[in-house]
Figure 1 (cartoon, helix red, strand yellow):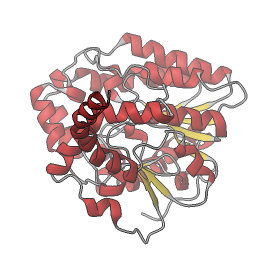
Figure 2: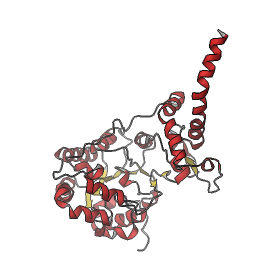
Figure 3: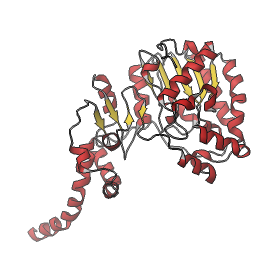
Figure 4: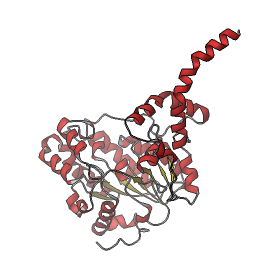
Length: 354
């Protein structure tokens, strides 16, 4: 029996040693912390940044935050609404945008998951052009499903991601010093993206990007008919119907809506114009959506072209994500052109002089 135990111990030593480093990295960076830590940190006064590298569950986190806290105004959409900040709207705003939402039906599910009496007074609704591409098929299953908790979560992450920790370390994506050096700025950072790159979700739900004016990948995808730039000549009637259902439910529940088509960066917009015959749906969307929003008495704006409100003046993180300054400019421009949006932005402080 002792001999068997010794053999088993010797057999287990190599895999156990191999897991020591990933365990330390995932623990020290905060990757092991449960998703609900986001809500816990919001209750504290200390600023924070949540940027996980291996296991994100922000679709679940964003929905639960709205359910629990019942903010007055929310931004809802993909990552393209995440430059909206609480300071744009005043008190009790939360940015519920997430990269977990891949189809408009996810936003409809979000709305239907808010209990009666807990709904926001207003929604700034980002209508990602990709939603309306009949050729777009990507979808994240169960974007609102919580991660496993406790030891189940730790084991699940370790089993799935320990090789990636070694890979990322040897590729220089993080250093030991990133996880051990003190941070004098008082910001709590959870997850490798936050610790290493200073990138992630802030306490108001908005997202802080570490890259800037990076259009190359978007232009490559346009040329190659890939990902967010799959060619499409037809507007999806299914998505149009989902939008109408969303607006009808909002009006029934007393929620004001301001919907918009988000801007592309100038180089990407010019590339889409150049290949307009391949992206016809992009240029037909506004004409399809305007009458629907008008029918329900809600505001709608098309900011696909960044020149409309001189958004390009403030720069873009990449081909699809304008800067915070750009979104502040966009919001002010929108409010000046449509009185209906003022019922959504009524708590917003006056914008700075431009």
